[in-house]
Length: 597
Ligand code: GCB
Image (cartoon, rainbow, N blue to C red; front, side, top):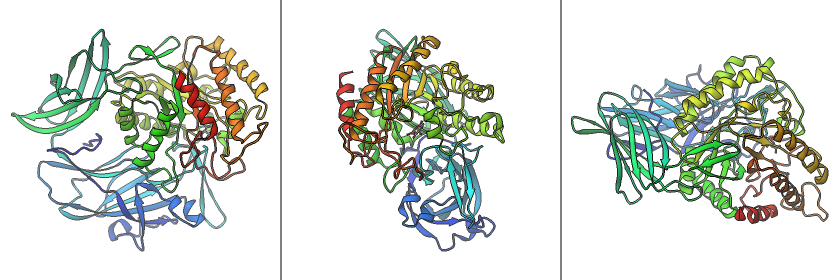
């Protein structure tokens, strides 16, 4: 049985970080498995930091742009294995797919590059030194999420072509842990809150192995118990609860104990925020109060690390978001490292948690086609739509299982800018929306993110959404350089939505302009700092005219790396912050607006 709970250390559970310099090598001819690299050890490896993307540590283009199989290897020392213990190796993610070997034996595999890979390692690890090997692959196709293709060049080199606008970073992007947990372990838990005047009810459900007794306790910040329960499910009653509020988080600690004959077999502590999320009419309600979402679509992206998680980068991002007055971000276009959500729980940030359902429109420059409203089908002629949907469904299940207990998560986003105008698209997405609604114990809103071709007239999928997310670039991809005309077109579309879906909240999940921090021009031109600011102000004036608009998440928090092409100058420059997290001028205008709201 696989335990996916985030690793913790306490008197029963042990979690040992395996991060550091691992051994690494490319395998362009996919020969390593047959040649027995997992059994014999990697031949001529180089060193590679974990966690990090491999791309930007290199100085040669072929290494940075490498596409195909690649291997990681390290030694794991196990001091003592006790009879009544289970051992797991847990990778925060391996991009995009992997097979894991322990002491040369195949121990597990995973498809999808943005969610944990947990390997039951008990049968393979021995006391002392062990070899842990990962065979990974970063190719894209039309059954992988995200979607893309691979082009093979005349010299045999493969090139990944994502149907999306971010660099196809790969590697071991998140921390790796050796977990020692008891034989009969707590495997998972759910919580859901309801509020009444002066009271909160927290229903809980614990999944545990074996037949021990479950005890649950909730303690406040000072460690004083405020409620307790017995049994695998029940309700905790809290008088005068301190609510988890937007940008004002209060976290209790939930303690779960598994006991047998009076002895504690397992113990798991985690933070718990008491809050509710609901959509009512045109409003998104947190604890019954309407909230207006302010913030960004982000990426996990920074210099050198690529998509590798760093506490320092994440901390800087939160500080910048606090400085500018934001309260929300979308994990565009994939679930982020779990530490992002833990930090959001502490800071009171709201997260729209997105599965990697991106690139579901067949165009090598999806973002450009999408922005300009060009239609090209996808689901109707996808080579194996059932396999794609299965991979997508697994990601929905895995992300909800991983993130369901975070108070910061207020909604699930099933896709970004997919083709949504055909019956095939509707039939593809309907079961995914249904699954998300069924699987989430807190019944949070479920949404998807619509690009320009998903117009009020043509989109077949918006009725599945609890609130509607729009990515719109009036003044950039449409009527770029003419904000007056852009505004007219923008309002024309919004008037249509007002007629079509007047009772649903709308959130703008993308709007923005590429902007060079070196370029100033009066009067403004596209790409200048002045234009970004004027564009933002035009967008704000439209948002303020439509009361059903309940949020504005600008594209993007910071400049980020993309593939090369004539549309990108060493990456996407739509950041309100530069890639090294310094504000562009428009950031000050957003700060002035958001601090007042
Ligand atoms: C979009 C995509 C996003 C792109 C952005 C852009 O619509 O969702 O991934 O980066 O546009 O800048 O073109």
